[in-house]
Image 1 (cartoon, rainbow, N blue to C red):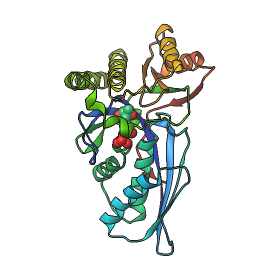
Image 2 (tube, helix red, strand yellow):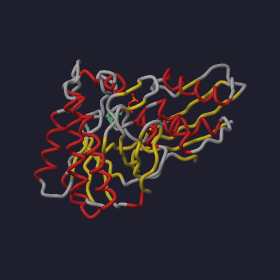
Image 3 (cartoon, rainbow, N blue to C red):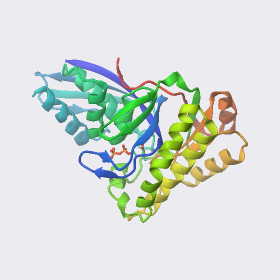
Length: 302
Ligand code: DP6
């Protein structure tokens, strides 16, 4: 049987950094994100008795993908070989969470191709085992991951905001976020970060509930800088930023536009603004490669 799924990447407002259980990909703290409309993975999964071996599209991490397929094969009790064809519409390994959209699309397509009827909660739980942040690309819109799975806080049309992604570098990152997570506890600031979490999560939830964009912006910038501070003080230290990253941040901050930045595990900068300010932010970064994202639905079968 064969199925195709599409899944969005997501941008984390409250970030997942550090795993309480590495093999189960269980986080130390809850995280909150938004699915992004302009960065998606489309994956076709086919199982057949006629295939003599498993195959995965060139250029992807075959072992990690097949380990995930094995989890689903086990649930379905299938021994059939698989063919996985996957395609991103955005640069891979540039900190644009390709593992999130990738493992979300893979989970949904493989479950359908195996004839498994799984709930959103079960799909999110499974996607998490492939890549932590992938569990947040299953539910719609604005999403919270707490514990084993993620759920939707608000649908995509709840708040008309934009994520203008400023791409400064598309090179593959040298250290994957998976390796980085495992060293998070070595930062002297990691515990401090966790101490700030409950208050910070309460503030972002209030900002979302009341659509207070200024509070929202203040919290996402504080959280971004806090996570990167931990990354940079880990052993070995992780520097994901480039000179351009700082330049983009300064441009946002000196523009006078009510726009706020956040950055995941890479040098590219997500600039969040309200829909009314989209054109001004686009104008500000007209000399850069940008992707303008709206809040998006979660993974679905094509
Ligand atoms: C900085 O979900 O990519 O983007 O579970 O090892 O695949 P693995 O980690 P991953 O980590 C994402 C880290 C982050 C923050 C976030 O998206 O919450």
